[in-house]
Length: 213
Image (cartoon, rainbow, N blue to C red):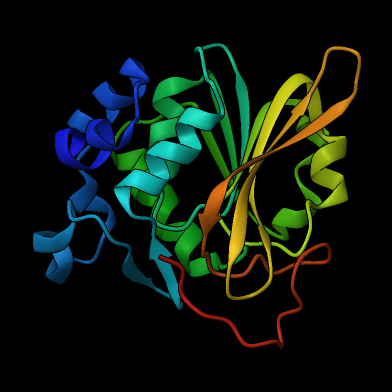
């Protein structure tokens, strides 16, 4: 997986590659899908949600430019796979999941895997986690019509926020940097397609959705 899907496609962060070599991705998908866990496509995890394909996980994580001491906010815990990778690369991870069943399942698995630097809560991810702000890095694993204002407000000086932005069917993977002077710079990192980010500053729950790839 690492050699053919990540390195071959330009992922160069050695710390990230080492984590993805050793982290058992199959543990984060239903048992009947274990045989497909390391292929280059997303897989269903229940509740109409998916675990991201390995390359997208690597691309988004690398874009955060984590060095080790960071405090990271993740929006969309999902299976917990991305959460575990962030926990290996940063000092603290705060993860918000809208769906209680997924949050409980991921939290139990991450605890069983002895991660002690992760906190998971159920809630509206578009509101962020204001009492723990500011964050050095914010990762949003669902597509939004715009960058939620509360997340921008909670991004610290020098911080990076990575989020898919666009309509319900296709988005642009976007990195927002906050300079140490407070200015924001948006970078286009290419096209993608994600499940919708549901919340007060994202999509409304009653609208139709779809899977990303």
